[in-house]
Length: 143
Image 1 (tube, rainbow, N blue to C red):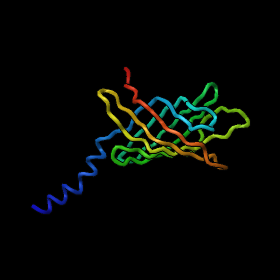
Image 2: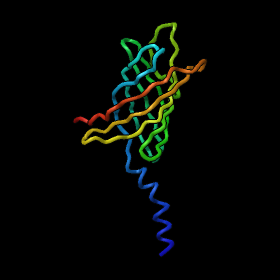
Image 3: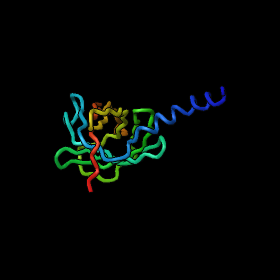
Image 4: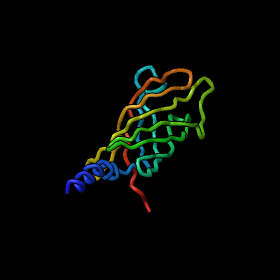
């Protein structure tokens, strides 16, 4: 009987993390603290979760300036830790550098609405980026 109790207790963290599915399309905004290029950007995540690993792409834009970036991540309970790894496609002014972001986004459910929110930091490869926050809502799949 003690063996079964131990097995069940060890399996609980796996069951708990399996309940949170980050797969899907998430749309909203990314903010940047004062001193950044702009205070608010359009931001989207396209995520696919397999176990506790996440892969996907991010999209950030302000006006005609945009970047699509590959990303990887790890799920820990209700939080997904994401890291952008590569610029897949972009357009920017010549005097700009892209910021490779890292974010820890927490899952919130409010009624029928599912949200991801949390802080981000980043680096251009040459210097630190001015950080901010990310606010996203999960898109409902349409037929």
